[in-house]
Length: 335
Image (cartoon, rainbow, N blue to C red; front, side, top):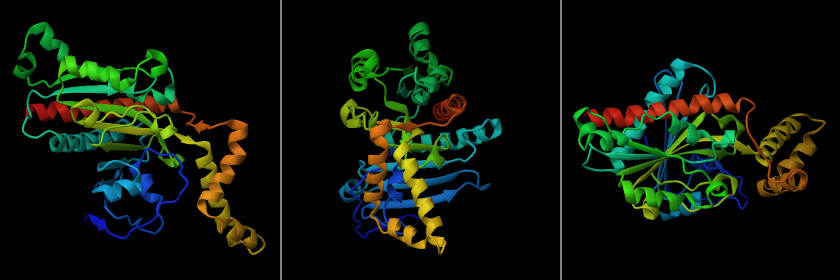
């Protein structure tokens, strides 16, 4: 059951960077994370292997509190997603496809057949943690070129969707904003929907490679690591933008912050160290985080951490996401 919270809560002044709306909601005090203008729904699949959380930002109050645009943010948490398990990845792909179809239906009304979908793989393909989008696009079965080769209507007669894909690279490689490139592509190819796939930043290391976020609000490339670029949204591009992201990096300061919290709890349980634990625990969270950052950044800079098996992880995840998109758009076109 959806819960619409109406109690105002003040967000902490400090910010541990994250792209996940789920983690943003969790950052609020209180067991339920009560936020005015935000609804929350949580459930699990029958076998309990996939947890789903839907965060809806309903109005401007919720958007201001969460620091994210109004819209729907759906998170799939799958603990074994970063490991090689074909059956499990197939199950996640099917679940992902179901929710991609539902979001597409809510974003584009009326037209079901002959939808033209542009899939964009954001990120730098030469940097493994950032290569999720490019690799997922590389796995896609694109079909738009068949219309060019065999004539208009070729895909419709065979029950195929019209899919095109692009990997626009990053500004350091092209000298152009991603939004600038996509505006030209959209103008020439006239897609009905853009699906953007991107690597995200998380606050919690346990979510690396195990969490998929879907949102109908579009995407802000690089925002999770403080790299603010032009947004990819319906307002900026002129067509609906469905974003699919997986966190592949977490800030070193955030890891230490989580470790310190665990240490505080341990200290507080021992009579000999209780006073020390209580002293640190009484520090406001922003002061704790600022202290950690002041200690780390002069030595290491704004360091981000990624798992040691990131190459395998990106390979599994890119295939799972591309299969989810395949199932969503191909089956939708057949109905």
